[in-house]
Image (cartoon, rainbow, N blue to C red; front, side, top):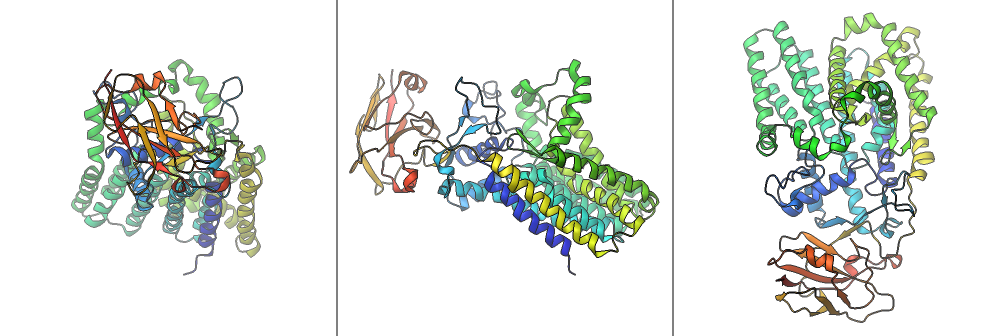
Length: 579
């Protein structure tokens, strides 16, 4: 059966999310750098990271910490697998804060300074990062298919609800932006829509078998392993089974399915919460999380003012469209139109209130899911100041299907939908408006000034990867391989066929591959001569008695289109500080 609105929604999503993917500079999305560093930690260390500030108490090295370590691992593991498949597991960011001349952070839409590698045509490393972002685009496609199916299941007599709700979601600015960047919430959102659809299917059937109960538990477990915003699924499923017990026979089968759901969910995700309890003293790691992000805690005496003034305003703004790191908001006419749309939909519910009660009991299940997600957001904001609309997206299907139901209520009341021009107009206005916002407003505003050195890059490869002997074309002269040193060394090397303007970088790293220093990529020290005297602060930071590896690489001139793989590099020598 043809689904023209679904096909249009999928096409709109591909265009819009890919547009945000390409126009958003590297790591200029909420927590995107932290998400990427989590992936890098998995690839480098082979285990889960620790919440910042907890390593010392656990007697672990500080470099086992990561900013996003309070999140479950599933999304990051999948992105890490994608990196390995692409042969780029050694990608590393080399960003600096974007500062004003007085040394203060720039209050513009950019957080970071951006390198020459982000100029078009972008470098291989940037292209690879865009592939990783593309995983979010694919998750969005699957989410839209599930939302449309959910709408058809909950409102079987009015397929227009699924059409309108899915197209609205596909063209919603903040949703498109979040599905064009790295964000573990995209996987959790997909899992939540799958849970909603299975619950709606079971309710429409009037029964739930053991197989469906096990599948439901697996979906809940996957969602919980993606992001803790999916915790609301536990009370939602409990409420579903309580309602089923009151309505269905035999109750023994319902109880068996319920038990299987929660056992399978615990089997999938329980180990992560047990790990948290073992490390941090509670299943959610809440105490360690509060300590790590104490600067964002909300003082109890400020809660009244916060929830009356800041919370509703910022929640509304960020739900409609807050781009980059939040410094660029959707224009006020767009916000006003979005608010008007929701208001009209709410009134539309009243217009068709009897229809909703009599013919769509499942719509109240959607409302219950939405209220649980909102309650979780409010509870989180009682502790942290985080009024971000993207935290409502686990309930994206319920939200936009309920809005669609309200709009279709008006159409039914005045027989608008019977006129083909109404459907065609909606199919034209929504994509054009969303595309105009992206390409006319957001993309130009997000484009950062790229006045960096031709050697500067936002993302590089091979900081800690030694060259194979046949690839090593720079000869290391001193210190000798395996030397024990009691004072800061001067590194000396012999480059092949040096050119005027060549620049070099010295990389120091541990036996485990942890980068200790990268003279240009991390510290912006340009080496034009084949020697480098290690500064005292570098030397003092090295552990006594532990081998340190060093290598040299010529920096690619990116204005000439050079790649890292084009540039000569050395093999790796080692030395041991013995001061």
